[in-house]
Image (cartoon, rainbow over all chains, first blue to last red; front, top):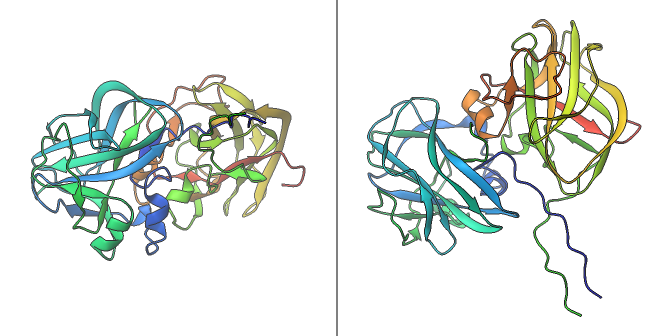
Length: 181
Length: 176
C-alpha cells in the first residue's frame, strides 16, 4: 500500500550559517558555541571563498542575501548560493563592504530553489575586512560540519572547486525570504 | 505498489511552542534570558515559528519579568502578516511568572507563523534574550511594527531595532 505524502515544514524567514537547516546544530555540539558570543574577526585570506552547506525541505524564493559585518569594513564582498555540485545559482557580484557592526544586505535577482542541499558562499577581497563569527577550536571541527573553501575566488566563480576548510571560524551570513533582514 | 515520495519533515510540535522551541528561533542562540523592560511603548515584536502538522491553539503566554505594568496583547500571525488570533489588550499580571491568557480555540495548519507580543508601556517587563546585538535578532528572523497596540489585523513587518527576543508562546493544552 502506498504511503501518504508527508507535509514538509517551511523554513524560517532567514536561513543563515547557524540555522538548523545549515550547520547550527553541529556547531553547538562542537563546544558551547553561541550566536550571542559573536566576535568581529578579520577575513582569513584575501579572495578566499567559504562555503557553508544548508538544506531546504521545500522550494523557497529569495532576493536578499546578508552579512553581519564586523568592526571594520574594507574592500569588497561577494555573497552567493551554490547547488550541491558547486554550480553557482545566484550571487551579488563584487560589492564594496559597507557598514560596521551591522547587517549589510545584498539584493539579488529573485531566485527560487527547490528542496535539496545547497551552499551559502561568501568571499572577501581583503583581510582588513571583518565579519562577525564564532571561532571553533580547530579547522577539523569546521571540516566535520561540511564547510568547504576555495582560494582566489572573488568574484565567486561560476563553478566552485571545493577544498578542505583550513580555518575554524563560522562567519555570520545568510539569505532572507523577506525583502528585509 | 510504489511508495509515495517522501520529503524531509521537521519534528512534530511539542505541547507548547515558544521562542525557545526547536520550531522557533532561540535554539540558535544559546544564551541566558533575563528580565527587561519592554523596549518601546506600543511596539509589536514578531517571533517566527514553524510547524509540520496542524496544531490547535487555546492559550497564549508570556514569561513576565520582575515588574508588571499596563497592558499586553499576544497573538499569532500568518507568514504574510495576517492576524489569526490574539488575546486583545489584557492587564499584565504576575511578576516573574508565566502569564497565560485563553483564546478562542483555533487550529493552525502546517507552515510558517509568527508569535506576536505588544505592550502599551515601557515599565512592564518580560523575560527576554538579548543575543549580543540587534543584528543577531535580525539574522534569526524577528520582525517588528511600531504603533501596534492592540495588535492590528494586518501587520506591516519591518526589521527589528532591538536585541530583545521575548519569551512568549502558545499551546493547545488546557494546562499551561
